[in-house]
Structures are given as C-alpha cells and as structure tokens.
Image 1 (cartoon, rainbow, N blue to C red):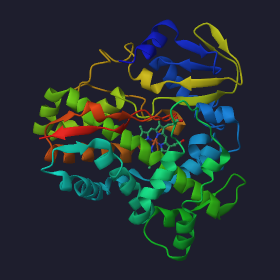
Image 2 (image 1 turned 60 degrees about the horizontal axis):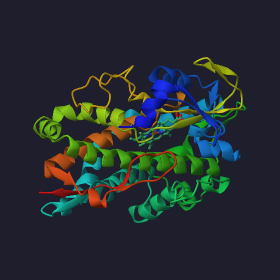
Image 3 (image 1 turned 180 degrees about the horizontal axis):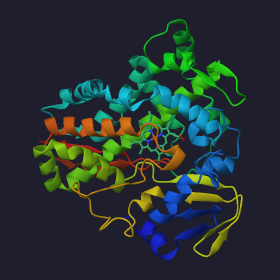
Length: 377
Ligand code: HEM
C-alpha cells in the first residue's frame, strides 16, 4: 500500500523532483505545520502544481487559491451562508437522493458505487443547496469534471478560461430577478466589507466564481469518497458485517475511510521565503507539495497505518486539509458519506467488486475511481 509514499517518508522526508522542479513533504509532523503556516506556504497562485506552474491570473473569490487578507474576507462571507446547521438540516434530503438512486437497483445483480450513487447524490445535494434545477445539474457536473480530466499520455494544462466558466451565469441573472431560499439568493443579497473597507454586495462575477467553486469542490471529492467506501468495505467483510449490525459505528468508519484513502491527497503551495527542512534549504519561489494522503499513513503518527479499522481512534487526519484552508464543506462531506453508507447497507448488506470493470479516475488532484461496480446479492 503506497510504497512510494512510504519510501519518501523513510528515505527522503524532503523530496525534490528534478523533472518537474518541486519539493514534497510526506510526514505528518511536516505536512501539518506547513498547512497551517499560510504566510510561508501560499495558495495565492493556486494550490494545484500545474496551476502554480501555469502562473496565470486567477479570478477573485476562489478561496482555495487565495491568501489573507482577501481569503479571510471571502471565506467569512461564505461561512456565513454555508453553516454546519444548514448542512445538517439537509440529512432528509440526502436520504431522499440516495433512495432515488438506490431503490431502482434493489433486486438487481449489480450496482456501481460511482455511477449509481457517488456521481449522483453529491451533485443533487450541492445543486439543491445552490438552487440549480435538476434538469441541468448533470451537464454542469460533466463540464466541471472535464476541466480536471487527464487523458492517457497527456499532461494537465490549465488556463484562466477554466475558471471563468459562465455555466451558472444564467441562473444567477434569473435568481437576481426571482429570489428564493437557496444559497445563490443568499450570496446575491449578502452584504460585506470588502478589502477597501466598503460595505457592498457581491458583483455578479464574484457570485459566479463562488458558485462554480462550490459546485466543483463539493462534487468530485465526495464522489470519490463513496467509491472508496465500496472498495474498502468489500475488502473488509468482517468490518462491513459489524457496520450492518451496529450503525453507530458509521461516523467513525467514515473518518477512518477518509484517513485511509484521502480523496484529495496532494496540496501544492508556493514558498514565500527560504525555509529549512531535514537539513536542506528550500529556496523562496519554490513549489512545495504537501502530501496529506501520505501523512495520513505515517507510521510515526498512526499505529499500523495500512490497516483499515473502523474502531480506530482516528484523532486528526489531514484529508480535509488543516489551517485556514480547512475544507469549508467538511460537515457536508461527512454527512453525505455517512448517509450514503447507511442507505447502501440498508439495501445491500454484502457485495463483491467486479474488478474486471473497475476503472481508476485520472485527475491531477483527486484520487479515486471512475467506476466501482459491485455484484450484489
Ligand atoms: C478545501 C477536501 C468536500 C468545499 C478543501 C481542502 C481539502 C478538501 C483537502 C484544503 C485544500 C488546501 O489546503 O489547499 C475535501 C474532501 C471532500 C470535500 C476530501 C469530500 C470527501 C467538500 C464539499 C464542499 C467543499 C462537499 C462544498 C460544497 C471546499 C472549499 C474549500 C475546500 C470551498 C476551500 C476552503 C478555503 O480555502 O478556505 N477541501 N473536500 N469540499 N473545500 Fe473541500
């Protein structure tokens, strides 16, 4: 399991990649403090390796790719509308979306954790929150995912256009005229103090950026979590049996799943000053890749880290990042993961993966499966 990460942790805790000219840290004790030191490890040029290299101007409002003070202004505005309370109130809706995906499959032989559930429920949930009509959700998801896809033998290229999509523009204009009780309406009406000290509402372009970012950040990762859930529990049937019998284990099982297979295992940063790691200097201007997925498997932090254990006292894992960029949607992602697992177990207490037809997803930043088909009986 992840021998390269293990070798890095053991033999090259500060690793330098000559070909692509970046450094990487892989131990928990290194990754965590760097994630919290935003002043040194900056996100303002993007937090994806290819994006930092592309060196393009990014639109204002993508908090993932911003540093303080602007990050904090935008984040607190978003946090105002994106509250844990509001997320938790979504549970019945999430159950309904799961039921809609799963009920038609009861009695059949096969079920795909990604196609039949992971690619549907998170999109419906974020679409519902934002107020995007269901009839348009799928086309939008495909368009957003397309931007992240790597084709065989191709390197990822990113351009400013990828972040200027006007996909949601029509809804924003329509919502501005027809307010509702969704997030888009709240964002259109929210007043805040901007970086010049002016109290104002968001511009149309800013709302557009927020909505595109939320739809992008909220879909792909949660889809992959659901795929991993299918795989890992198929490989651990005893633990699955325990979960079927005792659903109170589900929250911890989801934490352990997140630790074990981080859907977003790599965070890149731009280094703002010379720093020392393991006896070497990393010069200002370098790119530092923080391997939170490897940190989650660090034997210096977690006992027997390559063992999946629903009873593990997980403590803190780094799958949602750490520090000021800690995932804004973590409460929602956890809820979606828990409900999805519960609803799967309600209908399919056992399954086996159809490995001949399981396909890995190839994206720059997200790790997981494109399909995770299972035989259910
Ligand atoms: C940030 C992971 C689901 C919205 C992050 C970061 C990680 C992450 C690692 C930090 C990135 C960095 O430090 O550069 C995940 C995982 C998810 C998930 C593994 C699912 C299993 C969601 C959902 C939403 C969301 C459902 C919202 C709908 C965001 C946003 C940020 C973020 C807006 C940026 C926060 C900031 O920069 O201040 N996520 N995420 N995520 N996530 Fe998530």
